[in-house]
Length: 325
Ligand SMILES: Nc1nc2c(ncn2[C@@H]2O[C@H](COP(=O)(O)OP(=O)(O)O)[C@@H](O)[C@H]2O)c(=O)[nH]1
Ligand SMILES: [Mg+2]
Image (cartoon, rainbow, N blue to C red; front, side, top):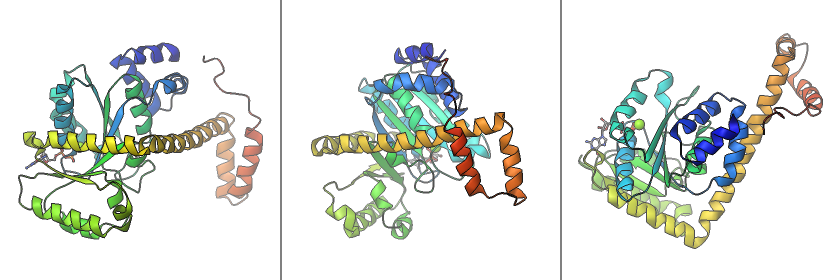
């Protein structure tokens, strides 16, 4: 039952969290009733986005940062979206092994999610999984993703503080980044600072930031932090940089402003997905979808007037799952 599940999640049950996330991924109707109950209890976790190219050290740093946060006595939820998992299970397994020290800790919940259908990005249900971990009482939620730009959910729409990880030698990548791309980062992390060129990269980032007109006029200048994630070095500096950004957000009023914007955008996404899901299901169960698509393929119909007609019919549909509380 959805109401039992919500209650268990509010009591911090990891089994209930796992069950609801599976429902969300499968678009199981029980998820919606449960999410409706949890929603008023969300908004307490601080959400940290860790993004960057594959191999930059996102998982290793997430592991290190999580252990640091745990030592402060705070609990952590981790959502790792994995672009390569549609091709092989290797990367997700790798993450699991890398984070295995955390698996035994009841103050940490880790969920890997597959990104289907496109390269890179943030899984569709990521924002919802963050809400579930938030409702389950985690103080901080870390979202690891390679997604920037081309996916349907941007990390900056989910995270309070977004960190972009780069490595020494990526100066050329910085130079060729489109304007606007630099703006996604509240903090730049130069990971693998044990390798040559960390200072040079730091200089290149600073230069790009100075040239960026939007960042120049903003009252937040992104921090640059050097880390060696494999040796747990720089993690404390990163935590401090995150705290500095958080206090900037809170003092400037941006924290609530961003959260309001995120909530509005997420609501539109939920309405979009849910309307499509309900209408598709109706068309499928009544057998209309096949016929309609066949008519369009055969050019007997056009999809525009068909959509109008479907909408007109569906808007007088009886309500779904009225049996759920
Ligand atoms: N030399 C060095 N290697 C690192 C560092 N951080 C991570 N790595 C290695 O880089 C590889 C990719 O790391 P991973 O965390 O899986 O990257 P992700 O794809 O961004 O999640 C692994 O072999 C890590 O051991 C670092 O600070 N220095
Ligand atoms: Mg990873």
